[in-house]
Length: 137
Image (cartoon, rainbow, N blue to C red; front, top):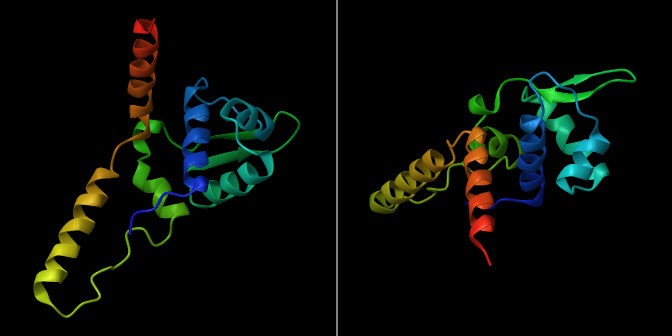
Protein backbone atom coordinates (compact mmCIF):
# COMPACT_ATOMS: atom_id res chain seq x y z
CA UNK A 1 0.00 0.00 0.00
CA UNK A 2 2.58 2.58 1.03
CA UNK A 3 5.55 3.02 -1.22
CA UNK A 4 7.32 6.25 -1.98
CA UNK A 5 9.22 6.32 -5.25
CA UNK A 6 12.26 8.36 -6.21
CA UNK A 7 9.92 10.52 -8.25
CA UNK A 8 8.05 11.65 -5.12
CA UNK A 9 11.25 12.10 -3.14
CA UNK A 10 12.65 14.30 -5.91
CA UNK A 11 9.36 16.20 -6.16
CA UNK A 12 9.48 17.03 -2.45
CA UNK A 13 13.11 18.19 -2.80
CA UNK A 14 12.17 20.39 -5.78
CA UNK A 15 9.18 21.88 -3.95
CA UNK A 16 11.45 22.52 -0.97
CA UNK A 17 13.84 24.45 -3.24
CA UNK A 18 10.98 26.45 -4.73
CA UNK A 19 9.58 27.12 -1.26
CA UNK A 20 12.94 28.38 -0.02
CA UNK A 21 13.09 30.95 -2.82
CA UNK A 22 11.66 34.39 -2.23
CA UNK A 23 7.89 34.39 -2.79
CA UNK A 24 7.02 34.66 -6.46
CA UNK A 25 10.58 33.95 -7.58
CA UNK A 26 10.87 31.84 -10.71
CA UNK A 27 13.58 29.16 -10.71
CA UNK A 28 14.97 27.44 -13.79
CA UNK A 29 14.95 23.66 -13.99
CA UNK A 30 18.76 23.61 -14.13
CA UNK A 31 18.95 25.64 -10.90
CA UNK A 32 16.44 23.43 -9.06
CA UNK A 33 18.15 20.26 -10.29
CA UNK A 34 21.58 21.49 -9.22
CA UNK A 35 20.49 22.71 -5.78
CA UNK A 36 18.43 19.60 -5.02
CA UNK A 37 20.82 17.12 -6.66
CA UNK A 38 18.16 15.76 -9.04
CA UNK A 39 18.82 14.51 -12.58
CA UNK A 40 17.60 17.35 -14.79
CA UNK A 41 15.76 15.19 -17.37
CA UNK A 42 13.86 13.37 -14.64
CA UNK A 43 13.06 16.65 -12.89
CA UNK A 44 11.53 18.07 -16.09
CA UNK A 45 9.00 15.22 -16.15
CA UNK A 46 8.19 15.65 -12.47
CA UNK A 47 7.71 19.42 -12.72
CA UNK A 48 5.45 19.05 -15.75
CA UNK A 49 3.23 16.64 -13.82
CA UNK A 50 3.12 18.93 -10.77
CA UNK A 51 2.23 21.83 -13.06
CA UNK A 52 -0.50 19.82 -14.78
CA UNK A 53 -2.01 19.06 -11.35
CA UNK A 54 -1.93 22.72 -10.25
CA UNK A 55 0.89 22.60 -7.70
CA UNK A 56 3.29 24.65 -9.84
CA UNK A 57 3.11 27.49 -12.32
CA UNK A 58 5.48 27.89 -15.23
CA UNK A 59 6.71 31.11 -16.77
CA UNK A 60 7.89 31.08 -20.37
CA UNK A 61 10.74 33.08 -21.82
CA UNK A 62 14.37 33.82 -21.15
CA UNK A 63 13.66 34.58 -17.50
CA UNK A 64 11.16 31.77 -17.19
CA UNK A 65 11.03 28.71 -15.03
CA UNK A 66 8.81 27.37 -12.28
CA UNK A 67 7.28 28.74 -9.11
CA UNK A 68 4.83 27.45 -6.54
CA UNK A 69 1.15 27.83 -7.40
CA UNK A 70 0.43 28.32 -3.70
CA UNK A 71 2.51 28.60 -0.51
CA UNK A 72 4.13 25.44 0.90
CA UNK A 73 1.86 25.68 3.94
CA UNK A 74 -1.04 24.95 1.59
CA UNK A 75 0.61 21.95 -0.10
CA UNK A 76 0.64 18.66 1.77
CA UNK A 77 2.73 15.56 1.29
CA UNK A 78 -0.52 13.84 0.36
CA UNK A 79 -1.10 16.36 -2.48
CA UNK A 80 2.21 15.31 -4.02
CA UNK A 81 1.83 11.61 -3.33
CA UNK A 82 -1.63 11.49 -4.90
CA UNK A 83 -0.24 13.12 -8.06
CA UNK A 84 2.85 10.93 -8.39
CA UNK A 85 1.91 7.68 -6.64
CA UNK A 86 -1.53 7.16 -8.14
CA UNK A 87 -2.57 4.08 -6.20
CA UNK A 88 -1.06 4.66 -2.76
CA UNK A 89 -4.45 5.47 -1.19
CA UNK A 90 -6.45 3.10 -3.38
CA UNK A 91 -8.99 0.63 -2.10
CA UNK A 92 -6.97 -2.19 -0.55
CA UNK A 93 -9.79 -3.93 1.31
CA UNK A 94 -10.59 -6.48 -1.39
CA UNK A 95 -11.84 -9.04 1.09
CA UNK A 96 -15.34 -10.12 2.06
CA UNK A 97 -14.31 -10.59 5.69
CA UNK A 98 -15.85 -7.64 7.62
CA UNK A 99 -13.07 -7.61 10.24
CA UNK A 100 -10.33 -7.44 7.59
CA UNK A 101 -12.25 -4.80 5.66
CA UNK A 102 -12.48 -2.63 8.80
CA UNK A 103 -8.79 -3.23 9.54
CA UNK A 104 -7.69 -2.14 6.05
CA UNK A 105 -10.08 0.82 6.02
CA UNK A 106 -8.70 2.03 9.38
CA UNK A 107 -5.14 1.58 8.17
CA UNK A 108 -5.87 3.51 4.99
CA UNK A 109 -7.46 6.34 7.01
CA UNK A 110 -4.51 6.54 9.42
CA UNK A 111 -1.93 6.51 6.62
CA UNK A 112 -3.89 9.21 4.79
CA UNK A 113 -3.91 11.37 7.95
CA UNK A 114 -0.16 10.91 8.38
CA UNK A 115 0.39 12.28 4.87
CA UNK A 116 -1.56 15.48 5.61
CA UNK A 117 1.63 17.20 6.81
CA UNK A 118 2.13 20.56 5.05
CA UNK A 119 5.42 20.90 3.20
CA UNK A 120 6.11 24.10 5.13
CA UNK A 121 7.08 21.70 7.95
CA UNK A 122 10.30 21.06 6.02
CA UNK A 123 11.63 24.29 7.55
CA UNK A 124 11.28 22.78 11.03
CA UNK A 125 13.23 19.72 9.93
CA UNK A 126 15.87 21.98 8.43
CA UNK A 127 16.21 23.72 11.81
CA UNK A 128 16.47 20.37 13.59
CA UNK A 129 19.16 19.23 11.18
CA UNK A 130 21.10 22.46 11.68
CA UNK A 131 20.87 22.16 15.48
CA UNK A 132 22.02 18.54 15.33
CA UNK A 133 25.00 19.54 13.22
CA UNK A 134 25.88 22.37 15.62
CA UNK A 135 26.08 19.96 18.57
CA UNK A 136 28.26 17.42 16.81
CA UNK A 137 31.92 17.18 17.64
